[in-house]
Length: 114
Length: 111
Image (cartoon, rainbow over all chains, first blue to last red; front, side):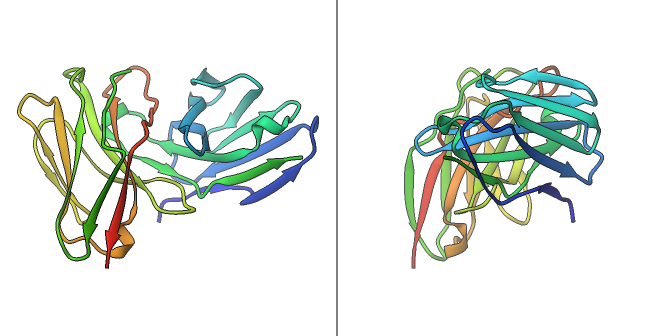
């Protein structure tokens, strides 16, 4: 069974903390993605990576950075967490080949910043 | 990115077929049409995708219009477990490979 695993299901952090959200996939996928999901705003792409050490900004990259040192792991970093970053964060992965291949999602991390 | 338009919500009855429409009038010749769904409190899951021809798998069927400006996801016999938000997404065959989600259709299944 294919798997995208996010390190935490629920996380509570304080304002100003540095936060790491980890995502691991076991399918040798080239592409990995980070989204956030908020009521009424849907899923919005933060960053994606199409290879190790390669990244591209999505629609809402401000306040976030990412790291992909190994093919299987894609980390989302909140340098200084703020309350407006309270959200559901979803990680996904897919093979290269663009539209020919499907994406697989993790279960999500619900982050609360207090 | 080419856009898709879906109804905000739809309702159907258990054990009946469901046809979920999607308009994508600005689709390019190399865009694949993908469908995903998101069950409550879960991440999205892949349903089906196609390019030009109709496609079938164990979950659903995808009917693509001849001009490719619209498509329909067909659930042949809906169950209560099919209640979810369904997303229609266009994904280029090459170049930027990101998945861009719209608002989707919230499907309610009545027992």
